Image 1 (cartoon, rainbow, N blue to C red):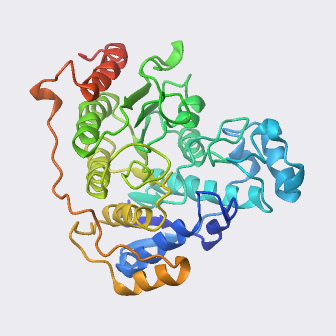
Image 2 (image 1 turned 45 degrees about the vertical axis):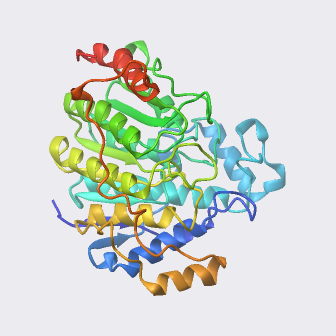
Length: 390
């Protein structure tokens, strides 16, 4: 197996563009790629442009009629069929939509193939993580569900146990739905509570179909949860389940919209804590999955202040050259930010909260605390189904 990491990148992914006023501005992808270069991380990874996902690959997850609807909307956006979630405010149709969506999916599938075949130990596609798309419809800014397609391809290649960890602020509903009945896939989503955020799913009681009980895991956090609570919840649930499941490959989704500056959600997490979870996912891959790690991007709508820094940390960790939290950002990148956006870019790589700390679950919990109630609800719902103590 190659010790090198792969960074999946094709400049054409920046064509995933819902329009000028849409919060999912593709400049976040371009600025991340430039920041990766600014830190010289391109020398520590193999930059690979995979082929777009073809029809047979897309059909591993998506219905044929939906794929045809996307293709039709891609040719004539004005004729988009809204019954498939296309041409809506969340998912406006645009020319070339099928092609660029398939390209992003292809990068995640290519990452999975490279890791499974031993061509790379780790692979990152920060343009991916489009976890809301359903088998038969677009949802939540997502056309094709590249995370589900990567997992489905791993199963097709012979994987028997794949674990998926999603730390986006929104529930990873599309991935959960794709593998709801499949005991070979463990999906864990740590997200803001569905009472206060789209897509209003991801309750602790959602634990998988009868044929796969205990393979869907949802940690629904109270709005306002900050670093200590977010990390406490992650470490109170995720490592024990990964240790029990012992995946052959770990797929993780790192939406940056948990950040306190994100305009579309209500958690209060710092870049320092996001970096800490990225490190934790890397370590879990090495401890339980032979190091096989596919890391994806996701949401994130503070497109200058947060997203590029968060995902550049992710690339550095995957490359084996983690960027120090105190690192200053190269001035050339900040100049490019201003030239592209007329905004002032951040000056350093985190929010100055390193090292972040949290209280471990093993020390006990407070039944009156809302964060601990959320963790306990998940443990009580899932752990007994897996033969673990809640």
